[in-house]
Length: 289
Image (cartoon, rainbow, N blue to C red; front, side, top):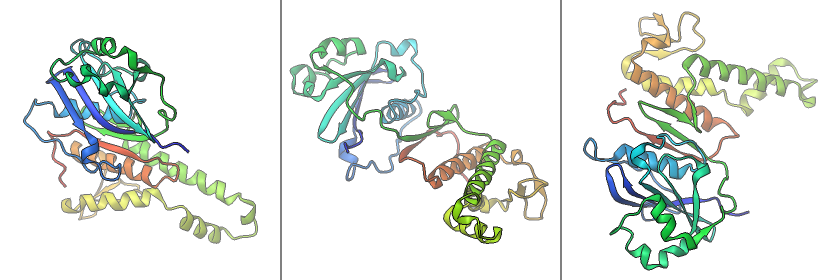
């Protein structure tokens, strides 16, 4: 089986705050895995811009978090990937979709034009013209499935789609749990067993996602002396004196944090989930508690 593609370098040319920017992920990776990465800088220096392009390069077949704008038409997003023994580049206008991507052989790095790239940063069109001899087809396995989350004040995305609200998230997990149990109940080997025995076996084989999420939520809420009780009919948020309230009583930043963590944990516990990356762009908000 061929290796999955791995992002090793990102270059931005003439885009927003960057005349020319290069991020070499190969140098900071350990055994091919990029560790936790934090971007630090003054307001307006380009942290969010760079993070959005790293998200796009890491998930080239998902919709971008920032669409193409008039000031990006003269820009270039260039990403290098390694796939087994093969290496290649993708080029696009920042913010454009996967249908507008061009593929280039990594042999272009041996040219004089490549050596002078930082001295004369090209637009997407100029890059295409300079290196047209190295155009190639889309590599095999480049569209292998992956997972990604992007959390920011403007967008909360999981695998390219918006997060569910609290009610929808809890409802879907409850319904999925009931559906999975019904499927397990109907298995031929369970016909002679009691319901109690089947429930016990099912709980051991299939952890309850909502119980796990509730436990983590309560660890987060511990400093506030509030807790979550999803089975409480009066309200899921319970204060230390026993009063129950709707989820919306929590501060907006805390609601977002709980939903983000809940979605990620639920996906992590799903046996069908894929490995992926989480991108956090929330400099204006603290993560307390």
